[in-house]
Image 1: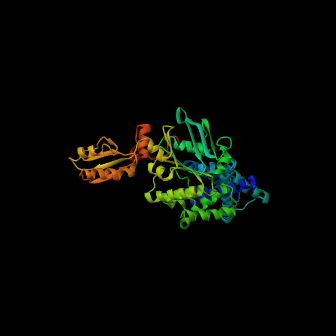
Image 2 (image 1 turned 90 degrees about the vertical axis):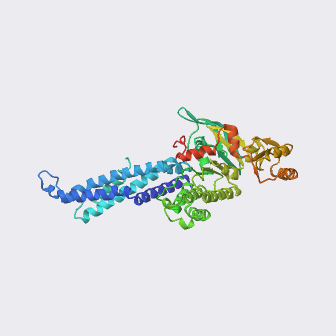
Image 3 (image 1 turned 180 degrees about the vertical axis):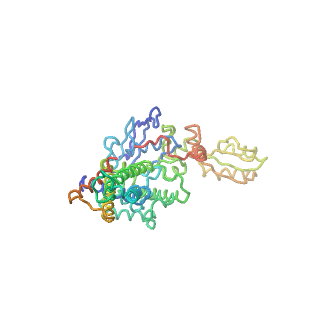
Length: 159
Length: 330
């Protein structure tokens, strides 16, 4: 098996571990899904009439207005969760296991980033699902939707 | 060909020289016991040999490859089970072994099969799908050992594999290490337990304050500090007469109390019948007799001037069973 294929398998395995780790540790998944969703529900319920104010952007509903903000909040917190999980790995010595293996260092970093990106994607899909489900209409075309999904996937990683 | 060659290896952390120019050689198929108290430099040495820490001086080769210039080849040849079992408590045992197989480049099908075999071997098949966080200390050590074996390494590094384990779990690990060695694996084992080094190691290196103070087979090291002695309990009043009888049979040692005679004998157990016969002929009743052999602790005392086990006991009592202070992250 070529080195690149082996590295790709390592990235996939570490990414999968990262996702499992997040879903098995409630304190990591809560900031990505639960808190932004709750905040979205509270703000939409409490400030829905705000769209009637003069000068408010032309939106169909307050939910439509807030959705992008909630997505970005979820993305940032996904990045934070990824960073915390990596710090925990270092503290408990799990990274020593990785560093003692004959794999390139970039595969370790990419594995973690892939996991965080997948969580970002999951959050984007979640908000795309609850948005229209709660009556918000998307005004964008297929290309725009693709960008809307891809940006959250990439966005958490720099943090 | 030696499996491990270390020449003048050094590691400094700021002003502290944790490992001070050590030399050692471990032959293929050998169990090498690296014995020393906490903070002696054992873990730092292991971390350098496993490529997790760069040396600041000297050189080392593992499986014929330089640990600095050919780190990746070294990593492909070694298995590592570090002091603090580096296990993710959220993963299951099976997931961890499969991940390790992937890290070592095994194809998926081979990795799955190897994971099943290893879990069976370390008696964790029944618990394989449980999360590691729920495992006992002994189970975690066995899982860590299994993970280190996934690619059938030529050289296995075990950093204090039995620290904190109960006697039964400790024995299980010892048996596994011996079985691995019988299969041809070279084992570099660090320990602070004298008995462990004595039982398992073909050769022992004793490290204290970053320097190797003694090296050799356990028997040879113990031989260096003196012969075994016989401890005879003869009761009060009989000691002077017993000492007179024993004078020609070996070297009398200073008495512990007024009831015992301590006699150093050259040939150990083989000298006992001679001693017993002589005392019997002199009409001296021996209430008990014990052959006391030199231990590795005697070797440690002889070389460093202080006890190893007493020191460890005191430190554990203080709750100082933390990882070694000098074991800096990679």
